[in-house]
Length: 286
Length: 336
Image (tube, each protein chain N blue to C red):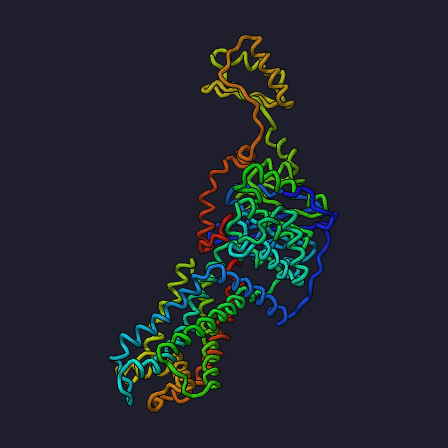
């Protein structure tokens, strides 16, 4: 180690004064860069994040597709894959919860979070930087998933613009869910617990919905729950925007106004959970 | 001289554990304060409060004249913190780590990059700067962590057990860097479990235990308080103990203590090895056979034995209690 630092070691360094939103944006971007770099250094995380939805596409369409009957359409893989993809896309973006919760839980158990907390940076940036990086990962996953789906017979039937709107909606939902993950990551004691806690409730949420089977095939008492499930609105919105709707859209109100309901839920979840998360982060060690 | 770090009556409790129980500190600009204490004494809690990581239950603190509780973000731009557990991102390279910290200190990307390269060179990490920190040795990580604390050339630095777990060569090198920083005017608060570390680096020492300050002064003052160095002799024949005491009395700077069962005589002295040699010659001249003889210098254990009546090892229970009260997060509970 150099024992004598040059004289330049003393005296203040030039800094840029940023205020309010500009400061939060700048710091969030610096932290997001860090998280994106980490993803390139640990590509396993991205690869395994991709394998799960790809496996679901293949298993559902080839193994179960022949048995699941969509009202108003003949059974079979070619029809079911059209119906299925909106559900798989929506489920995939909600799985951003797991990445955010595990990543933030890991950060909180390491000394690095003390470093962040001792720096003159935005208190929200560690979390926002994480959710922004997750958004990039989600977008990448959705693109690869779309290519795989196209290979096995899925098609867009309602124009590129509507399809892009559907992808935009999916990213919005994914971003909202990564804030739920942030709160989970701050609330559990270990990254391992965060992964389980992040995933376990997603199964009932995504299965008691119109993602994989028509809601009309469920018991009567379960149908309202499935229709009002915020996740169902996202699936219905994407199904319509992709032009993958088979037969009429169900009568339930959230299905008839699926795009609006889906956007509403995303905004609400983002606002509430980012507020709760930032508050919890501020108090985490205090 | 103006105070760079001031704390008044800091209190912080975790459940039943009073981690800080009315701690007051004052570090004049350009000096080094060594905060000494066993595990769980409250050293790290004090550092966490002063670096804005933890809100105290009561009390007041200011760093570089800025109130820690009222203007934490202003304080953060004036301090550098380096801890016991190297706070670097393992999956980023050394260069990326420092650049990120610079940008979060609100430097421009260009200045942060330049500063990172400067620091990497000073800390002999240039060759490893494009490798992820995961591949670094313990000593390299600690250097990278210290470099991160130096990014903005902070006027006030907090080093929490900076050499714990380092080998002697790395420890010495780190001491030299710290000394250079202090020569250049940095004010430093250093926590340590090692008296020799505080002895070498600190102008003033504060000893804490159970969240309370139990002694303060310079290293010499503290040593004097607990009796300085002493000669310990174990005499072979119990009958010869009184004569041995008589032989050693001329060298004594205080009353010799005798443990009859072990035939051990402890004599406070000053003058080091020369006195030891004289004592051996004197005992030899009187043909007093001895089993063991040695010169003992005070250790941190002696400080604690003398100041509190218990040794440092007794503290583990309190430490665990504190860690459990803080939800077991390692980063938060390392030193209640």
